Length: 291
Image (cartoon, rainbow, N blue to C red):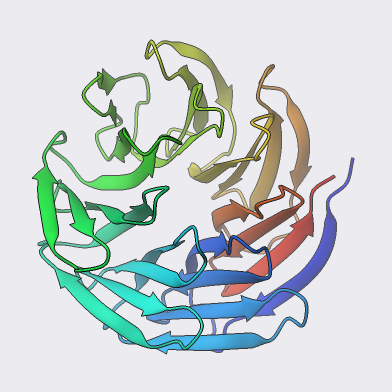
């Protein structure tokens, strides 16, 4: 089964790595954050830029969109989190509190809280509407590269530079031998998927914390993982200039796309699971149709 290339989007700044991509809940737009210090909103039907959001003073590492599709949250190397109105492109507020790069941001399913992970080793919980910091969590002793939430919004999962994964109050999962760059949870809430610089993807039982299996996935390291809405497939990207699709039940490779000239740094799926968005080191966002 082949991936069908739908379109490619090029940033205005050459070689401005695309560190994060997300498809809006209505499936009409893709939001990207990258080394050009901007957040961009693209129309997936016309391939035109809808908004260019300037305000960060350094690379944008992570972007997320609220469930209602109205608000963008971005985390940056400048140590801040910014909240934007997606439709108008206006900055609503800036959240300050982290002492180092904000590597990852996530939004609770009710759209009321922001979760952020940072190189300052902390995870912070913020009120999205007021911008107030609610609490700081310190489950890690090294950089927090990735954060995700269970579908019920009750449990924070985080991946760390020391190779560990923290699952809420359940505890720490060990098995990776290098930085955990990305964590994702199946929409049915049963499994946790992690990607690491150790070149593997690991699948864990979320209830027990037991590892189900490990996949040798991308040479040079796994940069991002995403899961289809039906919880049946994993999509991953890596430093080997590839995007790969895996069967969740078996861990078997379904398809590998190597139509890239640089490392692929981020992947995301549309809400219906039919489109894959990917961002790469050479300032290109590519969109593919799921086979």
